Length: 317
Image 1 (spheres, one colour):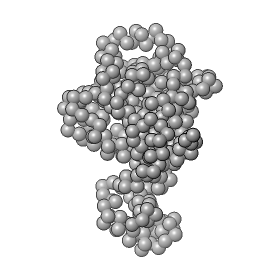
Image 2: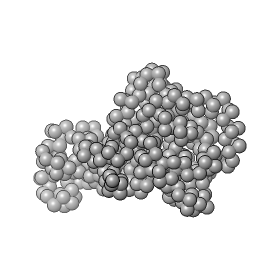
Image 3: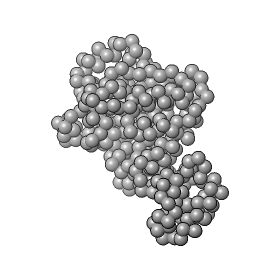
């Protein structure tokens, strides 16, 4: 089956099984007969495309992956096509690709670091059960909210702990506080001190990146306000990576602002051998490009439209 027919088969399967279109609706959308829709679904089942979930990883774009690797210091790029045009389904598909790969990165007696946010919440719901021993799961940044908003940080941590059968370590603090002196005081807490020490030997980190926009989780949590957004943007910030706000080159945009972050430092995160980053949506282009330039990504899990945009805007000189 050629690529165009494979794309159509997966697209129809997603419309039918995930978005719950009926066969007549799919036929009208695709410009084919209802019997053709039925036949394509059957063939997709026979080929193993449809199991408990839809396996679209067979369409990994190796040429686009190579283009990203040529442009940025990364090891892998897993690119998932947008076959349906539904942001929720696309997020689930990209996270499923990471969840499928995750066992290859998690070793016995290791430390893995996680953050929080929408992408991590979707990923956490798809984690496989792994038979591992002695695994510690730490938060790379605080997840407590300063406003009446639930970040989901604790749920993400719990799901990763359940997945690996390990022990979880929560940073009992917000990701950002009002003054650096508060951070200094928090770092004297034995629990936080232990987690930050574990971050120094962390082997695998799983996180997303946040673009500088409203609404966003950092905004809803009260970590930064409207004036901060305007100021950060004016001075060159493009978004955050693990609550560290960075510029277009992936560097800290303001060290004084960064001194208010409660969590592993950006330099510590850069040193982690396996940095798995998941992000979906063209609005993430600037912050993703910055993270890629700054050495904050080893393996990138991304949707095809965003990957194409990054490649197009970063030609090889």
